[in-house]
Image 1: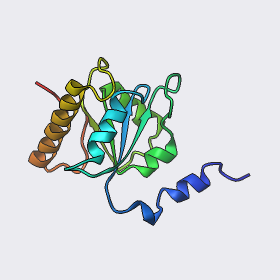
Image 2 (image 1 turned 30 degrees about the vertical axis):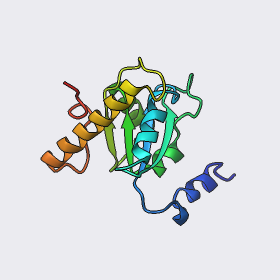
Image 3 (image 1 turned 90 degrees about the vertical axis):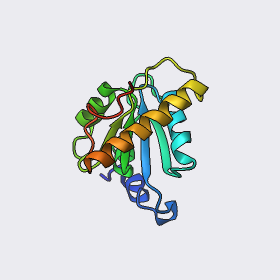
Image 4 (image 1 turned 90 degrees about the horizontal axis):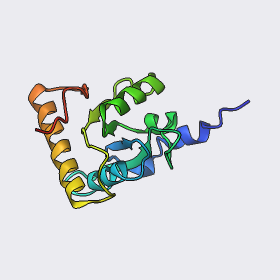
Length: 147
């Protein structure tokens, strides 16, 4: 029997996707925070190739799976428990990938002005932290803290 994800896995490396960093944006349901993050990171100054998913299989419209985790160069989550969940569900696929936690509370509508500002600052702070500590991989418990 063939793997039902074989074609999806092969398409992960499709050369026509370009060279942009591939960022998987995750929140609980994939409806508000992660789509907003995906839009922000797909625009200037980042221009990343982004996807938005939910880690809660009970609520997610587009649930996270091993193919999407394999596709990503970087994974951005909104809360620490989501990083733990991703690591637990996909231990092989996350090896060598950055998981960045932005610590975004689940209280904003999609593309809310305050949410957009929060995400931009949190992602920028995480990037500054990584550069300052010359980190290849980021422990979500020490980045993305908003003071």
